[in-house]
Length: 232
Image (cartoon, rainbow, N blue to C red):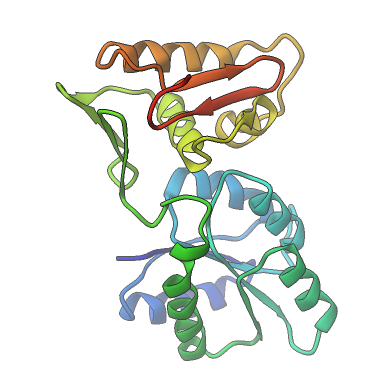
């Protein structure tokens, strides 16, 4: 069942869309502030985001910019004021997958969602439409939030799991410490803050107990990179 996040401060509209889309086979969650969107996306493994332009806390276009510069592969459908071509154009330029003017017809929205999800895997930054992601001898189940190895399940903390998933989202690419701190620890990286390094160290140790292959490489002064076949 595809999982959708609706971000709109109109609670009545959220209820209307949630009821309709639930009957259409989607699992729905809602938020009503822009600054709640990215943290919720990282916690929820959503297949698609429905994002209103006008939101308290953080404007929709700023939220979209944050999503598109993050490790999140989530497709986004923007909801814009009817006739506001400027917002629509800027949204598409920032990487929105589709848009609909408000008030929108729930049936049309459902059709747009299906179309975006059909084409999402080909353009996704990661095999993120897969619930179970494999690297080396490990399997990460993003829905059940479980990591398993040759000996069974491996117990990870919430932060360790989210770091591993974030690195898998951009496997073979360097992810900066600043990016990981903002999106996983949910705070700006401060000078001399070693908590991220500590979480990575603990994660490496747990992976190392089940495999001789080192999958996580440190890029000094920048961040970390996960290599599914092992770091060189």
